[in-house]
Image (cartoon, rainbow, N blue to C red; front, side, top):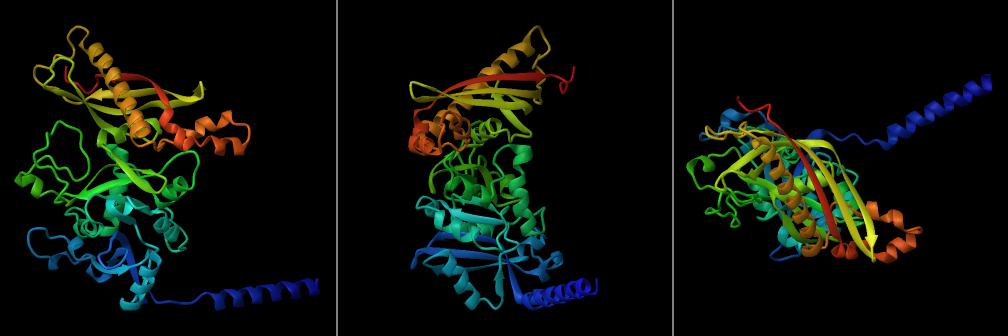
Length: 413
């Protein structure tokens, strides 16, 4: 017993010394915390990397702000930019000229310009995923404007902390359905996967050159294409717009999905929690009906092979409540509610089929991970790899069934 006790004490002492010697104490004031990273094409080098840094002393000092905005979010971060041949060298160079060591443990967003994404993002993703400070839940955004402009305009009048604001941007998908909460681990897994392709959050600035001030407000929306030039829109609570998804083939950006197409994507992948889905009115082609939509049951998706080509079947079941109601709507008269339900079934079916064929024929990018349903037909891994699902997805045919249960409980009788 005495010998065992001595061994036990020696182990404890060695453990204490091991941890105390390997853990370096570093004052929080010696670190500069990165809130977001923006990556653009450089003018004099390959990349232009922007680090949005937190200024802790600015938090809560809203009284020092000028003008009517009165928000501390305008001064709680600063942006330092450096041109470099690679992201890894950019981080190293930034540590050389910034007075404090960069710390990426609180980085909330990686913002990559479309110009960079069209050239490939694998080097960027691999560099960050291998950095132990970068958390796997850090979101990836593709900006239609420059990444620097996106970071500069990411200020909210209703959210005083910029880091928190980036979190809200991604989680807004839970109640809008206009985007998806996509993290760096998601993108890394898809880039290295054989079952599907990567996607990312699509964003832009409201003052971007992509903005379409004359857009029809009834048409589908996408990030950066504002539908109004009114004074109210200029006084909006934010200067950025997150709307839609960026679609990749491998690590290269190949296209974009609109807000409605993104809702279809969330329905197919069982990520939809709730959203407002507008359909044309079956009674008046000049008007629309707003439906509050949620999943009734998980979407049942399956893949079969017919003559070597993938046949994708998708069975969608949704609950919908009518939100819009005009004075002359007359939704309760006769079988009008059944007419709306039947029209909603047809409309949702067509929209989801259009989403599938756009990703298949136009992008050849299986961002819905349908390959996970197809792999069961291959008895060895080599046969699956040799089939090359990611390229054969363009040959897929789709059969969509939609059942929208329209509930009238929100209507005023």
